[in-house]
Image (spheres, rainbow, N blue to C red):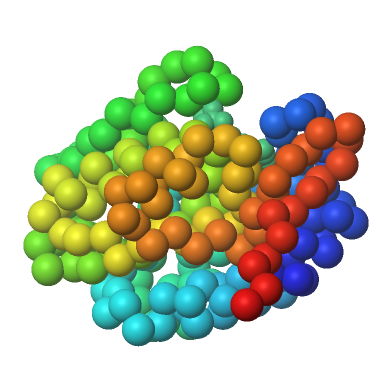
Length: 194
Ligand code: G4P
Ligand code: NA
Ligand code: NA
């Protein structure tokens, strides 16, 4: 997605060989117009998949997910990372290991909102090692629902997550695929020219 790539080049900060900071439009301040266009792109890419729900993880996955849900006309559920005061009944829970933080965290959803028969699109802001996506897949599986695909705003293709998910036969659509962050520079995977 050209608009997103341009935004990353203009405003993204390369913090290290493996970390890209995008807090001016995705992870802290949010650019609503860009999120809307991201939602339109995901809606286009997954239009014919019979999706009934979108599942994401708080917090940065919520904005792109809501715009996609708006465009597809379906609800958005975000898995919680912390126990909620009101969300107490019939929780489905999965464990997500974070390589950056070197700790495991529980994520959960109520079994009320994703059920048998649902066909779920998973959306997240970043794809690195794929642990968050695998945790979300686990929740969908526990609910007895099926996975339609995975929509990622920024994939770091030099990390293992993309291959892990695609090897399982999942449809993964990433709107920007970063090939490398070496020398303080963002390089994107070249789109195949047919
Ligand atoms: P890892 O596999 O590389 O260890 O990353 P992990 O999944 O543990 O992700 C930890 C958090 O860091 C996630 O956000 C994830 O989206 C984010 N993240 C991973 N790589 C990058 C990166 O290069 N740039 C940015 N900006 N974020 C990255 P989170 O803690 O769940 O936060 P949030 O969703 O509340 O924003
Ligand atoms: Na994040
Ligand atoms: Na995230």
